Image (cartoon, rainbow, N blue to C red; front, side):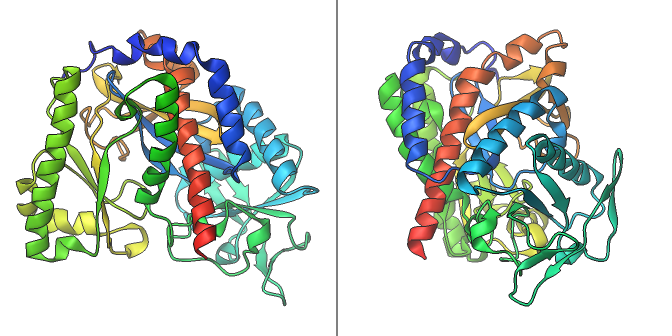
Length: 413
């Protein structure tokens, strides 16, 4: 796979620079029409010939990878969001996942607490599920928890503080809405938890905004998004359905190949098969032809259908595989963008020396490099050169899509 010398994004960079003001005004208008996510993170693939968000997280962990120099920017945006959507709030309670032994996740909570403190809020951390713990062990030391319970009205109660003015949810609700979460004071809203949300809903919403921006910039929409479709109703459990899906995948790969031919891309097209629900990169398969699906071992099939918390996958997102052209010391790199109130605010880079440029880089062998540290590398400038243009554009379009997802969820209720 050779994408390093394919410079379509570089050659088209002028379309962003020449339309900066139009883009700023367009984003402001679209954000005003939606309830924007308080925060989110996206994985971006920069192939040289296209840019695409391949995963979008509404309950991001990993804030510990945000460098100190960028935390003030996140705090400022966080304050703007809270003052607008939760006016008068002084006490913000951070509601975490149950990762009591994951020290990196504890550092994520510590950093979020620091960012909220920088924004001027009194911050507590805890949940009823963690009430037996006085603290959690992190990489840099223990993180103090505040005992949290449910009061007589079924609302969240923080010991010594009462009911928080706002709850910042850092729990993706895979198993459903947790007791004590007052919908009005919780952000992100519980409707965006993985018990309800689908990845395909995000990409359907993203398609709408990509179409508008592509028309403005006179670009092929394919340059700004992955192609995708959904296989529904546990298709992998039925042999006849597997055969049909394999044929659908071959047809889909032919569509990608047609785009490659149009733009002179020499790579072999592949697709990702993903659980349409869930997180952590669980259940991702990379294939280049439909028959590979039919020849899956039981172990790989189980891995594909098994989700976080033991939940079985029901629907599968079939997504265009977008290779990364970014590499450090011969190993692939992908940008991870953290956003607050819809705006790209921090960038770091996932580097994985044990994966190739088309595979899923989100694995235990991944390393995280800040933008500051990336600049110290010999080719660091070339890796970050699209951070505040193509990468930011793709990431901020994804946040609009999240806002539209929420709007659609609330309409459906």
